[in-house]
Length: 168
Image 1 (cartoon, rainbow, N blue to C red):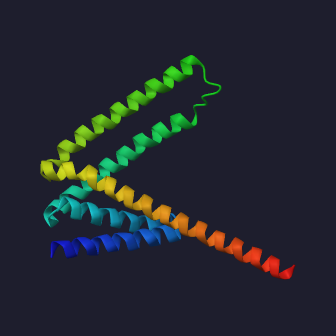
Image 2 (cartoon, rainbow, N blue to C red; image 1 turned 90 degrees about the horizontal axis):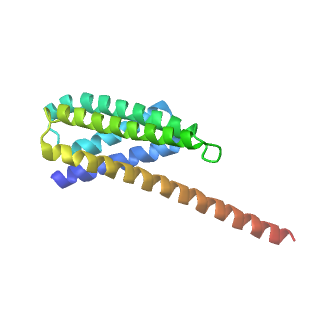
């Protein structure tokens, strides 16, 4: 019974990912993507309804703050030009990168503590794995989509070449 539920959630997640990829990054697509992530993580962690109700607000807050920190790092890297940077510029960027890593570690410690008030340590250990599985599933789906697109382009090119040969 548990395996059946897992496969149903997995199928739902894949369907949602497909629709997200098909429709781009619209608001509804992002909501569907988030719903798929919630379904997968809930299943992997084995969250009870009571745990899920308490866990998800904490997790969403954590994810939001983590994203903001990552955005800071992305901005720093975007403004850094390796070919024109001075030694001082490079040292400053390295220091800022270390500070951001420390912020991420501090955030993880803070929210791990908060999450442990809701879920047990085994569930918390499973969280990173579940997040990784979700990312892998998403990346595989994107890769499949790109491969399908590439295959369609090749078929179009072959058809165009055949048509041109027939005309000549």
